Structure formats: structure tokens, C-alpha cells
Image (cartoon, rainbow, N blue to C red; front, side):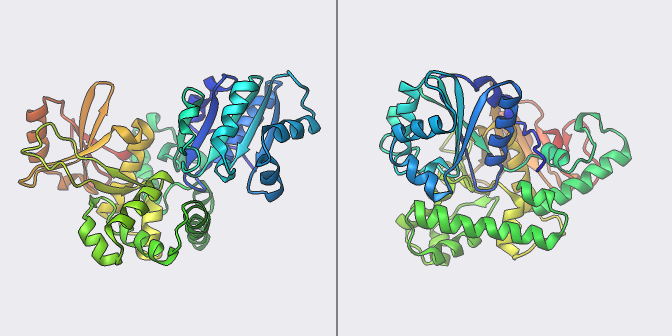
Length: 401
């Protein structure tokens, strides 16, 4: 299996060998294991001793659940000599009965054992023991591939910063349309056959329901949860109306809140807060809902892949690109009580960047952008689109945000 370097590894690399435990969080099949394998090879090439554990194997899970002493003894059986510097990579750490105290003990008492762990959820890391991990972990969030990574995994030979010719731009438009349609899950990107892409994404959903939702989150009625997931996919990019969602899914408010929290903690969705400095004028309660992956939205919503570029699916894809560049906590939207709306407001490096998203540049209406700019004294902002003639000054393709 060819290992591609993910962009986030450049952020992880400086922390390899530090005293803190490196924790990779992310949804299933977003490439956490791939990053661990890449890190393993990178470390071995530099003469480091590395041990890898996959806790989806029951016998390994059973051993590590016995405690740190058994873990250290297992390492010794594999060639670890007490006191030497080694790296232990542990995949699916959330399966441990008590991962937080396990990580704390290793971090505090075995400084020479550098841990890099992955987990598809935050449930057991953010447990009642989470305070004991304060200052002991460095965490990274792993999302599906960015469009730039999509191009690299596909080996298209296109460098975004170097593409300027009309033919090159047209090729990028075509490829981004495919990226919107199928999303950025690595295995889906690498699979050329559409029916297999569909099956791989269905497997992601099935495994997620079975392992994260049923087993980790202790959700008994997985049928209702699965139905809610499909309803939410039809609302990606829209204001979240809890009353309407409760009626449509026949799920109570408290249970809906629990389910939405599960989806957020497993990196499937994000509730995006409104950007507001004047609550009396601007709506400050209802968040917008977004999935992180547009391919998953298409599959859940249509039970297949739509070739037509749909506005909300395109906006979902742009949201994913913004999260990968700026981080999920930097993304907001803006909406006034009289209906003026900005799709995204990005706060980064002391700068406020308003962004409007349209499938076609010619559908952009500047009035809301001008209103926001005047109110918050920002720059021009960006009109993000894919089709039509790119607007001068403020127009941006998704790969240019």
C-alpha cells in the first residue's frame, strides 16, 4: 500500500519525541491509521524503534486493558529494553476500558515511551478522567482529504499555486466537481469505480452505526439514529430547526441533543454558530448544520451520487475546505432578522473574512456582503464559486480560499 503524506503530518512532525502524548481524533476511515503508518515509516527511516498496536484485534485490546505493566511487558517481549527511547503507536485507543488513566500513567512514568494514538471518537478520552490528562496530550483533528490532497492521492500532477491557464483552470473545475460528488474519504478517492465508491461509503456508515453509535455511545435505537442521520444530510448547509427535526424523526428534544452531540464528537457534523456582535439585530440562537464530507451527504440524502452540482452540497464541500485550512472553531455564519445572510465568516489571525458561496459566480449578490463589511469594517471578502466567469477582485475558486 502506497503511503501518501497528509498535510497535517507537517504539524504533527515537530511534536514527535516530545513528552506529551500525540492524539489523532477523527471520523472513521478519514486516514488516521494511514497517518500512523506514515509516521512509523518516517521514524524508522530516522533510526527510531517503533511498535504498532491495533486495538480492533481483541487479544491486543484484552492485554492493554490489563494495565500499563502488561503493555510494557508486551513491549519488552517485542524487543523493548527498559530505559531506551521508543515510539508506540496505538490505533483505536477509544476501545480501551479506561484510556485516559492508561495514557496518564505512560506519560508520567515512562518518559522514554513516546505515544502516538488515534481514536474515532472523543467519548473515552473526554471522560471523567480527562482533567488528569491536562498538559499531557497534543491533539490533532483528522478530516477527509482536502482538495489539494485529493489531487495528490489521484496523482494528477497539478500544483494549485501553479495552475493559471484556461485549460488548467477548466481541469481543476472538473476535478473539484468530482471532489464535491464523491467527497474526500481516502479510500473513496482512490477507487475508480463508482459502485465501489458507494459501497465503501456505505461501509463507513454501517461501521459507524455499529461501533461508535451502538457500542461506544450506547444508543439502543439505531434505526431511529440512522433515519435521523439521513434527515440531517438533507439539511446540511441549512439552519438547524430542532422542533421540525423532532417532528420529522419522532425523536424527543433531549434525545436529539444527545444524538447531535454524538455526531459532533465523532467528527461527522458541526453545528456552526452565528457571528454576532449585536444580538438585538442579528439572530443569535439557531446554528447552521454542516457535514464535514459532501460525498457522505450525497449518499445519505440521495442513496447515490448526484452529478448535478447542488448548492447545499457544494456549500458543504466549501465548509470542509475551510475547516481543513482554518480549523472548525474559526468558522461562523451571519444572518440578520431581516434576512441578510453571509454563508461563512472566518476569524483567523485577527482578521474577519466574510465569504459567500454560489455554484455559479453570476448568482452572487453583493448587498449582504456590503452590509456586513460596513458593519464590521472588514475587507472585500470572497465570493466563492465554481461555474461561470470568476468575479474580479472578490471571486475565488474553492481551492483559492
